[in-house]
Length: 68
Image 1 (tube, rainbow, N blue to C red):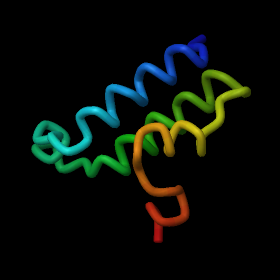
Image 2 (spheres, rainbow, N blue to C red; image 1 turned 30 degrees about the horizontal axis):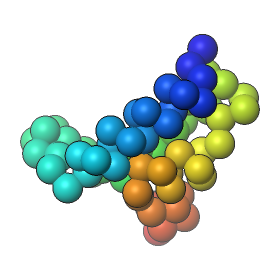
Image 3 (tube, one colour; image 1 turned 135 degrees about the vertical axis):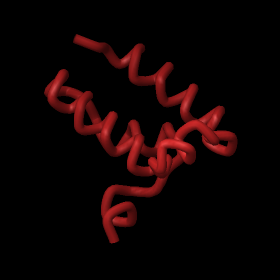
C-alpha cells in the first residue's frame, strides 16, 4: 500500500513536468485523464487517499471539469 508520502512525491513529479508531457501526448492520453486514472488506482489501494487533494497537488482541474 502506498502512503501519503508516495502520493505527495508523485504529485510533485506530475506538477513539475505537466507542461512537458510529450510522452503522454504521444500515447494520446491527456494529462487530466492520466491523473484521473492514477487517482482511481490510489483510491482502490488506500481508503484514506484524498483524491481531490491529489488533483490539486498535481495542478489539474477538478473531476467535474475533467468529465464535463
